[in-house]
Image 1 (cartoon, rainbow, N blue to C red):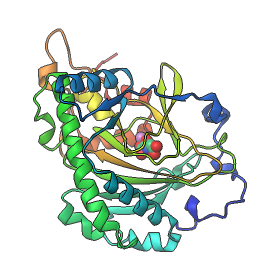
Image 2 (cartoon, rainbow, N blue to C red):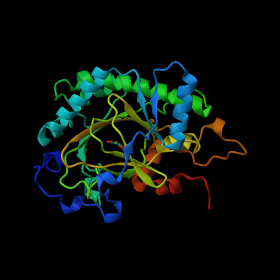
Image 3 (cartoon, rainbow, N blue to C red):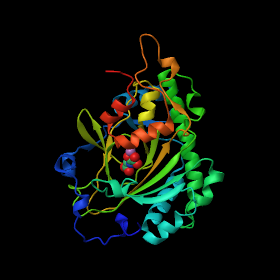
Length: 340
Ligand code: OGA
Ligand code: NI
């Protein structure tokens, strides 16, 4: 596997055929997609909580995406985390594999493509480091020990980002008018860190770092580097998300769309590559435990607002999600309550 990692290749190789997407899925020229201030930016440092709740709610309805600034996670921790994430992906393929093989239950892994390389029709221009985070005392022993500061930095980093996640979920609950504690009973207990690495690509117009997908998490809190690459699909068009220093990009995942009975949008997005810069990002997926039921919040459902989605265990959600490859129409078909 380690030889398959995109970051293990030499740079001057042309794009192999298996990485070339069919014309209708190719991202085309990067300049065709506007990058602007279109994704709302929410300042979490202001005193007016009602304003924060409203801004987050509107952004989650309209875009399913927003950025947060003044969020309380210290800048130096974000810098240190990004440094160790880059250092990890700069190691040899062999070292990466060794560092991710400490848990026989595979709570930590390194992979390339979509986690199921063998079954991919087209390979993604992406390597990933994935590990469980909570409880930290249980999982930290399985995290990489190289780079040497990995655990020392990523421990506090994930603790802080998790706190931020709970704050955002509380704002979302208040915007929806459901109990502020709705997400404290297992729905947010199994966060996963995914460190994505997209090396420079000889022809970004043919490849994708990640295909169009909706996330299988409640929300994702993304640390982007200064390099652009994330695009959101809104009103049948792609828009680029501008990197803002020390901001986090937050997006709504499909399970939250189910929980809020369709009031907020699990937004589709993808990642494009670029020809001269490597891009490293870290997704902190706020995920439910396997045995937790995903269903529309009871307080949002009544005779005039019927449940639009079926109830199911998160582990069963995941099986269907994988089968649908994150494709929104397939997800709607799999989870919709309608019998038509
Ligand atoms: C993801 C994702 C975006 C990025 O990890 O699901 O969409 O820019 N990441 O890496
Ligand atoms: Ni995603």
